[in-house]
Amino acid sequence: MHVIDSHTGGEPTRVILGGGPDLGTGPLSERAARLAEAHGAFCRSVSLEPRGQPAMVCALLVPPVDPGCVAGVIYFDAGAVLGMCGHGTIGLAVTLGHLGRIGPGRHRIETPAGIVTVELRDAHEVTVTNVESRRSETGVTVELPGHGPVTGDIAYGGNWFFLVEDSPVPVGPERIPELTAAAIALRRALARRPGAAAAPVDHVIFYGPALGPGAHSRNFVLCPDDAHDRSPCGTGSSARLACLAASGRLGAGEEIVQESIIGSTYRLSWQPGAAGGVIPSITGRAWIMAEARLHFDPDDPFRDGIRL
Image (cartoon, rainbow, N blue to C red; front, side, top):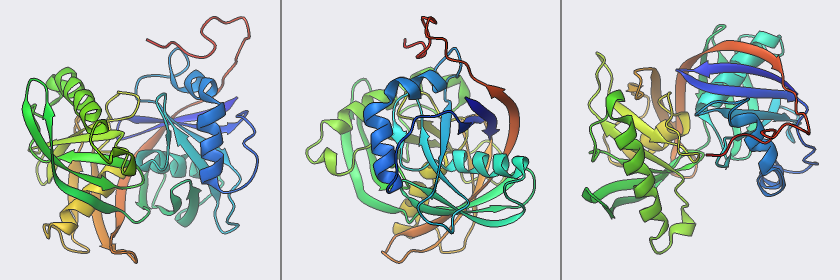
C-alpha cells in the first residue's frame, strides 16, 4: 500500500494513494458507509500502531463523482469514518502539490460531507473553504461526573461537535490526561440525551485562554478514537465559527487565530451560507514527513493493528 505521511500543525495525515479496498461507485457518502460497515479491520490496520500512531487520520483517495474535482477522499481514524477533516484536507492538498498533481491556486475536492475548495498558496500553506456549518443547539447542559454541570453548544462543521466555552479542566498541555478523561465522560453523557441520534456528537472541544499573542483562544479537541487533536481541528474550527456567528461575536469576513493544545494555529473567518449557516475559511500549514509502502503479512499477529 503506497502512502504519504504529513502533519498539519502537528496532527498527522496518511494519504493512501493505492492499495485500499474497492468501495465501488456512487456518492462518496455511500462509499464511506461501505468503508465503515465492511472494512473496519483495514481502517485500524493503517491508523493504529505498529504502522500508525496516536491521532493518525487517514485519507483514502477515491475517484470523485464530480468531474470538476481534482480528487475524491474519505477520511477515517481508528474510531470512525469521518464526514470531513480540515487538517487532513490541508495535508492532502500539500501532498497533491508535492506529487505534482495540483499547482498553486484553487482546487475542488469531493468528500462525503460535500465538495470543499482548497487554495494551495505555497508548498506548505493551504486555505480550505469548508462545507456550510451551523449551530444546532445552544446552552445544552449535561452532568459531568466529578465536575458537576457543564454547558456547551452542539454544532456541525463536517462532523458533529460539543463545544464548551468554559472548560471544566484548564486547557494546557500539562493537563491532557485530565482533559481527555473529562471529554470522554462528557461524550458518553451526551450520547444518553434524548434525541442524541439527531446530532451524534463524536468530537468534544474545550476552550481556554490563548497563550500566544494575538490568538483568540486555545482549544482541546477529543476525536472519535479518544486521541486529542494536535492541530486546532478544521471541522471543529468550522463548528466554532458557526457558534460565534450565531451569537453575534464574530462578523462575516473578520479573522481570528485559533490555537491548538500544543500551540499550533489556524487563521479562521466565515461568510454567510445559502442555508443560513456559515461557509468557513481555515488557513493552516502542513509538511510532508514520509513516503512509504506498507506491507500486510497474513502471518503477522498485529496485521490489523494493536487495539488497547
